[in-house]
Image 1 (cartoon, rainbow, N blue to C red):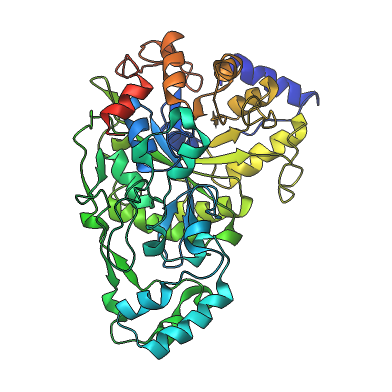
Image 2 (cartoon, rainbow, N blue to C red):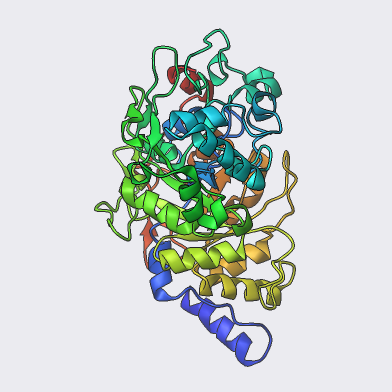
Length: 482
């Protein structure tokens, strides 16, 4: 904050005219600076050009030059963390027609294939029923979800943007107990990370992904009853299946060298395991993306006209709407990884004095967010097609800036929204990466040196090495093989 602004704020507080805005502490400001300014955050990859949160959407966003691939996190019955928005999969898959509202008919055969007896498998099926909610991710093994068509719905909803490769091909019936789809998949977090690293799924000659599954060695010789007795949350999560993610990816021949980060959202605790944050910590650790255990060795967000965020300390940003999840993430990640607190009306009741509509209440919210590990505020914005509430009014954005926090509004779909909001934001959740990237280039906020740094008035911000052009959206999908 400039000295003049600090003096004005101090005088106002001393005379009782206004509430003091809490400043992000020095250690929090250092973590904030892991994140590039004017960041383009590819919301679910894209909700406009491809089926959201699938391989096609994230490969497309990476090739367009987005800084982050954004996703939401869910969990399957066998503990696989999904990069998927909805806990109920009916909107974005064919789960209703494939499985109906009962436990998949193949579940008994799945248990048999894992080596369990008929009696043991049937008894486990009864235990499964106790936790079963039709269409909810937590009720299904990941092997079952890999048979779902996660792209056909997009073609039906958007015939003008439909592509044959998005959907499953019924003319390729497949074989085996659970034949995987030939189109787009319900993604795992490991998949999202792989796309950010310039990879794609390994597929067989028919277009099905290669991801073998088997019983984990730790459970060999045990019965399902014994596994269930020691399973988490009273047997709700049966984490007995091993997936070979290490062999699931290959170098993408269409990779142009961009290395975006990932921006992942914890949902409300009641819909996911009580140790969700620890699970994500472990996956990031295994993938080499946990900067707490493996600090990044590069600092340049852009290099030689390519996005390089995924090789820096800002490679991962965490986010949540949930106060409980924010607290849990703060405990696990210790405030040392950038964290965004997302806003949606009304203000959560458990924030003392919090109110999204008043200066005093908004300051209370900022104070609470900082105390619980947030470095970024993510307010909703108004406008088509989502018609969210406007939570990024100029006065609200000003308070976020005074607090020394980044402002990442969501979600951009139109140039009108960019015109209205760009001066208030430091990063932009966008369904149209091509639109947002071009807007920033056209308005001198990307591909430039000597930009104003709002958090460090004594120095300028340089993103001159960012890509200087935006590929054509349709041609990029063509090039990627869709």
